[in-house]
Image 1 (cartoon, rainbow, N blue to C red):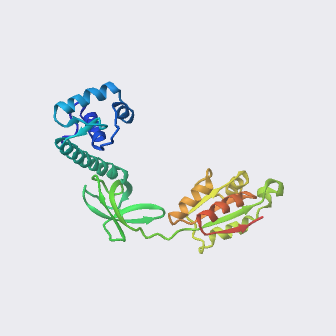
Image 2: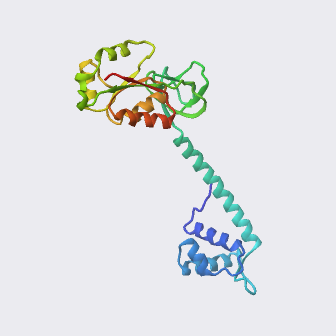
Length: 263
């Protein structure tokens, strides 16, 4: 597609488009200001446009007037520019909409796959689900696969968060914590805990006493919310008023939670 291949064609098009607006008192200075170029550049281009029969000198208060031939040129170049822009946008949208997933099987570029979420991870599969996509590049089984043209909704049941409220250091810290109650919560299958997070030094010590390796300890409220939105159930150890910090965030995000006081 030929779109302003020669140097200066874009500027000529812009000047011609400004003249096509048929503003009665349009001056070279006005055009220069709108396009961010010099008055001299405008003057030289208008002379060239006039020589080519695209612009003619206006009469009375009209300084310049676009000719019929000029109108056709503007329309043609504007259409070419629109087509070119649409192609660029299509390409950019394709890049913007590339999503990574883990491949259940081996796939080739162009394959249609279905999508499912398992333990917070997106998988591409040949088993039909309510959402599907197209494979962008070849991928091996269990490898990361690039997906485009995502359609449908991924069936996902949001998770919930269990907050274990621990005593502060002034209240006795880990020494004043009911460890047996926590062990009971961890063994309770109705909770079905997928991830564990900690907030504060006391939480770290309590987790150590229970031989628990936390999945996250920094930006815990945000990490817990992200996991819950992906369908995971999260247990969070929080000390004292830290409990209020996370519950406030959860209320704003409308995520289900319960608080267990083990002080």
